[in-house]
Image (cartoon, rainbow, N blue to C red; front, side):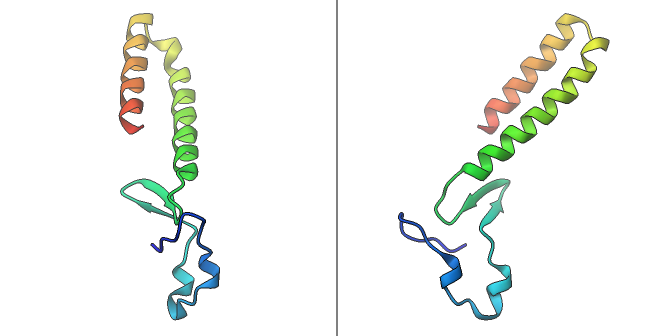
Length: 85
């Protein structure tokens, strides 16, 4: 990962020689996506995408669960999500 000043760093202007093919605009480390300016846009979008995916899955099991059981599932989902953020 190459980090630059707060104004931004254009990695395309740097010569990395044979390592140039490994230069990426966003890297993932321990599941967290960051860019060279430490903007979290890609990470936030990834969490939102995953959240909506899992909410759609939860909506499919809603008809087979009682209200109380579904309430427990939603609370567990929210608790897990709040730990990610």
